[in-house]
Image 1 (tube, rainbow over the protein chains, first blue to last red):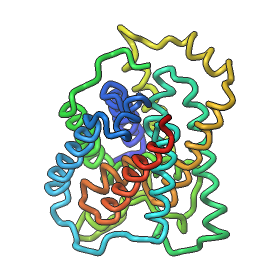
Image 2 (image 1 turned 60 degrees about the vertical axis):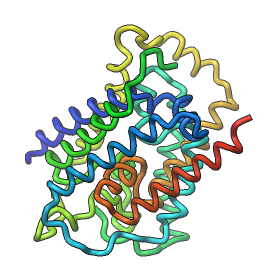
Image 3 (image 1 turned 120 degrees about the vertical axis):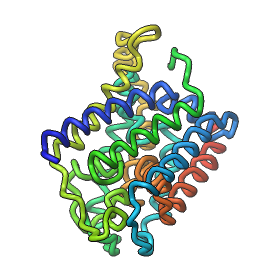
Length: 138
Length: 167
């Protein structure tokens, strides 16, 4: 696929995803906190339902999948813990923080600044402290 | 702040799955927003590798998908925000004056909390090699054991941390 078509598809799917994330309430920090408080499981059902549907689709689309061992590296669990903590603290993940910004929740700019900084910071920290084999890059 | 009624769970599920699978067909790889951010921040090959780009399941030859031009992830991220704006148009549309004011009022405590939360999200996602879309949707959808573990970890952690944050 040409670069231009990649660009078009990325723009379209980003728009569609952003729209949906907003309408389904994932960009609403209050709703997300209700999920974490286990007070309202609608978003969990949304997520689980999506995963099941994707699994069905992936099984068809990736028919020739290998049974290679899945990708495990030392950063997986600690990274996920840090991510989960941050998610609970700011009520957003990278995608929903962008959606929040588009919705007019301009305070999300702080969240995004943090996400950008954290994303960047990982580079030097990994090089200096971790240096584990995280597998081939993109 | 959401003024519109939220979608039932099944509509959200269909929508998310539809986007992920359509992306898979269009781009030849799986979706992962933290991977897009990592790409734009210029992370190099030795960094934690986003799970969604793992080539193993894509073809018998397992050829890695052709590297996306950097403008594509950028377009996706910008479009996410545009999607949010689109969703707010109409009844309950964006109250931009109020929102601008909220940033200008500079509640420093609130801003610091968001900054710290965001820092953990950004750093943690890179360290884990994915986020809610990369590990949560794409990785779990592919039944990747690492992603299933990552997803279980971040949901559990979020629930636990939330306990301490609630008054």
